[in-house]
Image (cartoon, rainbow, N blue to C red):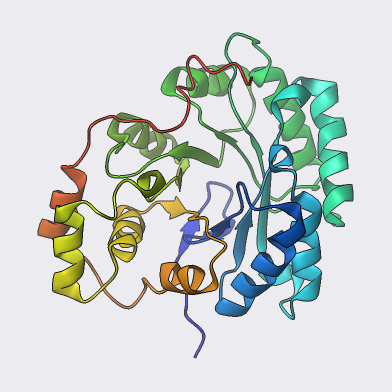
Length: 277
């Protein structure tokens, strides 16, 4: 029996699976096999980026699968060197060509890069792509409140998604509250805290009590917060285990224990300072 993955509703009415496969650092040489296997497992959302260097392999993985294109939610991201209105439009064309597709489900500005001051013009390019029907939804990654406020003030469309580093050591409550007020879906990358969380005794204790893996507890926490999440793995068993989080729930007490681990600790760059290099 196929697992039914809950959806998040985007502000344009499109529905996006709450669980997807992230393919950051998955080599081009192996990503097609990884994507095909994930689709066979039941995943229906794949998240890549131009900067990952594996978009072509993601497209090949979809074609190898028996799952139809219309059943899969495919996302990619604008690379940092391609920011700016005209270059963003060209970059999107190149992404579709590499993937062998005629549309994307979601296209994101990968980083705000505030010192370059190109993210608003990049966003306007995404708005054009959306208006032309070449992408079904548009959003951003790693945007802080100040970056989102500029997009809201100077753009014409509210981002549908903000994909951010989010895990129990970086709960991002202020940003999530802003998302809620503006009907922006929170998508979590790095949901396992870059491997630093599964060994935490509090996570391990909840997992033992429930007869689950620590990683499953961490992913279930994301789902119950209402986030979309995209754990990355290339190991078949881990891909299957990560997906097996829809037949149990964390109690309110367990949710609070996990959330209380917050240290505002990043493992990725600070979006206010990162300049893309």
